[in-house]
Image (tube, rainbow, N blue to C red; front, top):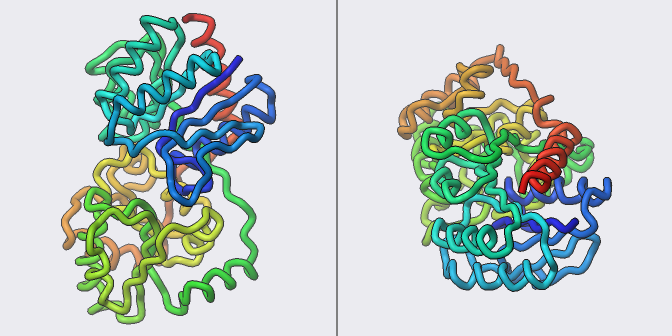
Length: 345
């Protein structure tokens, strides 16, 4: 059998989707679930167009919101050429692109195609598919209000933390001149992620906590973002490797993600695993297990208030069950679903 994974990012480009499919694809190959796995992803200048390894990586797609017809044609060609048996697609790609591809794949080739919904903004992209994976119960319930599927299942993020020794962490802090206490933001640097509100709230926060810095890690999508960095207490480090990012999170006093669109943000789960305090975006799972630390009001003033409160809270206690994100458990669940889908299609 041959599997194709379609994702907006894949290692070495860092991000939630990259880590999810990177871990999954290696697990599938290690356990010889598929004869061959192909990963189709977007092209970045710093990466090769094609890499022939155990997993063949083809970086042929344009950015998710651009030229959906070209994306469809590229994928259609490779699906035919490589005789793909099942297609697993991240839901961030544009609706028009997904609709076109789904129609061709179902009506002409009679092959199963899975839509993998990882955030609230992508829910509408699931309506053209028969098989659906959802990142959590909240998105699962929302999708079922509009569509019935042949199969729908909850697949949470896979969390796997590499070993981080004190010597390496110290090296990373010195490399990026992190000599003070700091609050950390990790994610795409866009208004949708709440970064501009966080910067404004941090300026007021500094009036009470003068010895803190704000450290920002992620791809930059805001024009003239440098103007927000004139404050010497705000450091933008750009895109870092996963291990570097985790080292900085582990040494952080607090990680915050003031985003309204998150499904189940990986970076928050990683911070829990690293025993770093977290301010969570609103999510029913986080509200259930960590209610005092969930950001329900996304104004800059409320972000400022909750940062002060949590940093002063010496009894910080988050009981979120990370066992639900075990790589072996989730990978085995996905494998069983693959087999069922192929059998039923």
